[in-house]
Amino acid sequence: MTAARAESIDPIGDLIAQVAARVEPILATFGLKVTLYHAGARGVGARDSLGCKVVAMRTAAVDGVTLRRHSLLFIKETVGMRLPDGRRHDGYWYASDLGGAIHRGRIDLYTGDGPRSMAQLMPLNLNTLTVAKVGEFAGCPIA
Image 1: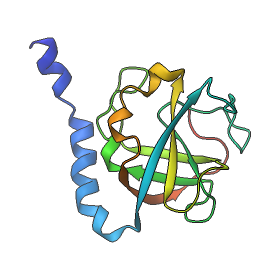
Image 2: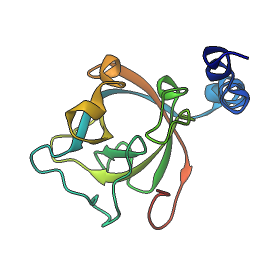
Image 3: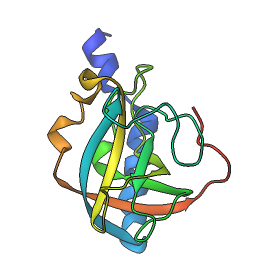
Image 4: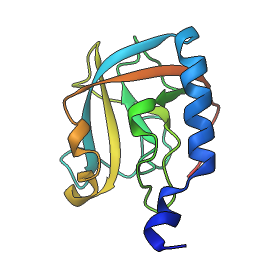
C-alpha cells in the first residue's frame, strides 16, 4: 500500500463522520463565524480562562452566553484535519476559554504555537461553521 493510499484510509474518522451525519439533525446547532488564535498572539497565554493548558486544535473560546465554558462541541468542518501529533481531527473541541472580542455568533479556535499553526485552518477563518453542543466536560480538557 502506498503512503498516499494509507493516509487516505481513516476508518475511525469515516465512522465518526457517518454517525455525525445521522445525529446532526437532532442536535442544537449554531452557525458561528470562526476566527483563529495562536500562542504568541497579543494577550494569548498558555492557559485558558479555566486555568487549564490550552490544547492545539482542541481549545475553543466562546462568548459564555450562546455557548458556555465546559461545553463539548462538534464542528463538522474540522473533521479529518491533521492534528499536531499527525492523527486526524475527529471534530470535537472543548469550550474552555472566553474571549473579550467574542460576541454572539462567533467562536475562536486555538491552533497552536505561532502563526504557522494557523495554516491548516486558514481556509475556515472568518467563515460560518456548523457548531453543535454535544455534551459537557468537567475539569480541564484532555491534552
